[in-house]
Length: 115
Image (cartoon, rainbow, N blue to C red; front, side, top):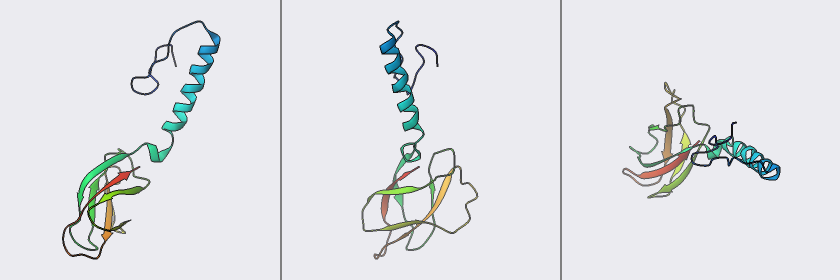
């Protein structure tokens, strides 16, 4: 990485001759690289996902550009159990196929973090 290159978004290295400052910046660079490599932090929050009925497939465009490693239910308008469907997924780099179990009839809305 060259002086002034971006680490993450707007964070830039500061040019200078101070060896202590340079060493600290290198340690910060490494710490941020390690954080960026944590799968659960490299994800996408999808809100307003609607179920279409009890135990029916829900196709969610996760926006990761790769196959999702997992998901976390973040918010729901009703108690719901969410799980990955056994239905074949033709586009794993763009979508995930889920199913939801809940005890009420009707459409339910939830949000999930995909990583």
